[in-house]
Length: 410
Image (tube, rainbow, N blue to C red):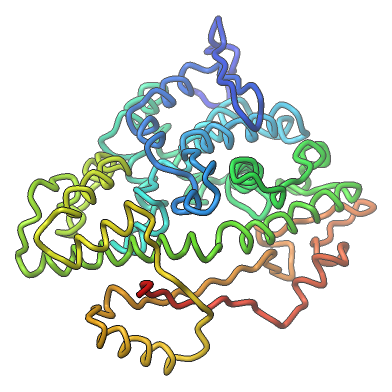
């Protein structure tokens, strides 16, 4: 296929498909390859992975999946293409490529997302690339459309595509991924912290020097977006109760790994074995989802190992760890000793967690595509130079770090 000659209208569906969405109302799909990707088993697996991990333990309605988030990112990228100036600067082949990348950008997430990655030293972006380019339905769909198309799609996610505009749409400090998850997560948690004016930001998008920039008239909308992200992290994503749930999950997997080394008989946990044995490929990876893991936890909650059974019961029945601010390592050591005397193994029952977040990363130049640049009287300036609010945030020397320690209630 000649990418320069390809036109979206050549492959457009006669009858477009519509997905009703809580955030974006109607999500339209009019390209066969997009619809086929949505129906692939790798994409459908994302229905069985929660977008927010343990956050539903705090905000009970936060049960939305990575599937609906992925559709939302596709929707916003499609809006960027057809409802902003961006569409004039990319050909139809690249438009389809970036829409596919938007839809598939999170396909490599495992059960319980980032928490699961930390336990098994995995990276969801690496597995996203492996799934797109490996032996998968997704790969076959992309290659059936055009030979080599899967590599072009994955290159956007890897930030290697020659057209930097496409990368910015998916991965930057103001991208479709972040815009969707802020709006979506705010809605499903029942909070207002993540609200910002999406359509105003789309209206002020421009392309200058082959990169996305923003008109000065949109600075206030961008400031609201930056603040929304800041508040969502501290009020929602880093909520200590959610982190307690995740620490309990980490302790379960830590215990399972320790028991596996000792030759413990778990019973049938076939889909988890590749992770314990450190032999995970994209096929094994996509067979595991949260439903399977929760089933395994139920079985182990009635197993012979008392520590694993107790941890699984706590996880399943929301008997979460207590927590408080950790002030020193000496304090942690004293708490570990105290719980050891009470009969708890501190390796699993006394755990700590540090979280920090930078609302805007200031590169101090316009060379990084992650930098948000503002067009002021035909001159490009980085956001902190034209926004007092963002400037104050980036010039602050205080890096907020939240240290927490978690332990069982006696």
